[in-house]
Length: 237
Image (tube, rainbow, N blue to C red):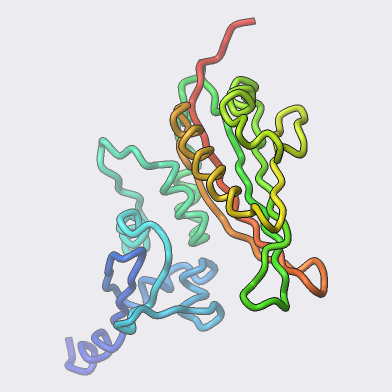
């Protein structure tokens, strides 16, 4: 190999910080699938972020990126025999939009045994903030729990009676609590207790997200959302 080729390869090296884990690879590897998010990112069509050391930063699962990168290098999916994070890897493949990898992960065994199913709990915290006060003033906050697990909603009603005066609404599959400007901090306390209570019922957090929006000229809305899941046994009719 000519010295010029080696020099080109060295210039072609890219270091990524993925969720705190560092990976070094070539630019050509990252661009193997031009239609993927990484292909667009390193083509200049996608915004990039850098860490304090100047490495490209991607806020995703660091350990799982090992399998993403190996697929980019070989176009083959190779996983350990005892690999138990297929669903998480599917989510990563979907995030990076690597279509051949998505297809490889699509033809899999069912995630759960056929006699089980997944129960879901959605917890959302909505906070309306005044745009023009300093410090920022909270106008109102609302906490909503949505689930088809009736026993969980019933347990919340029975175990969180100290917040009953804030209970705004109870419907099928949903309970809401509303807090005004003077007692908005109680929403934080209730949320902490709810997360702990839901977790103790065998649910684990699947994902979280934050959404910012402006609905009116004088206020902003910030919504935090948590999705909890657990596997339950099907009951014969």
